[in-house]
Image (tube, rainbow, N blue to C red; front, side, top):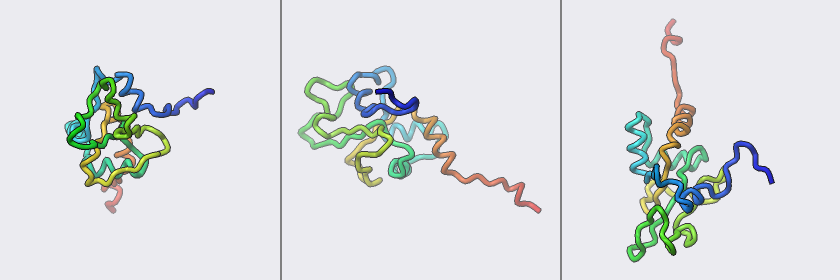
Length: 140
């Protein structure tokens, strides 16, 4: 079955993690991604990222929810028997149609992981959501 030319394969984020495709350029947790964006003069914070995700305009590669203190931290690359996608503690968020519940922006129990390569698309999204006015045209 042929895929549409620009379609995203199902579970792309999970495949990236499970196949170790991020060793050379690791994914960034939400706070590190926000700092990365701010260093490049993109105005984002955790709440804005969640709002964009809720609108279906921009999302992390995947999300994790830490199940508790007795479980080791999520690590990349995945260790044998430590696949959080299989246990339901991590889920792919790359689908065009959102199949997961976007967390509340104040929920710090979940962590989104982003790629630095998403920054250009985020820039386009932010430009499309920002009103620009030319004051010269308003003068009489």
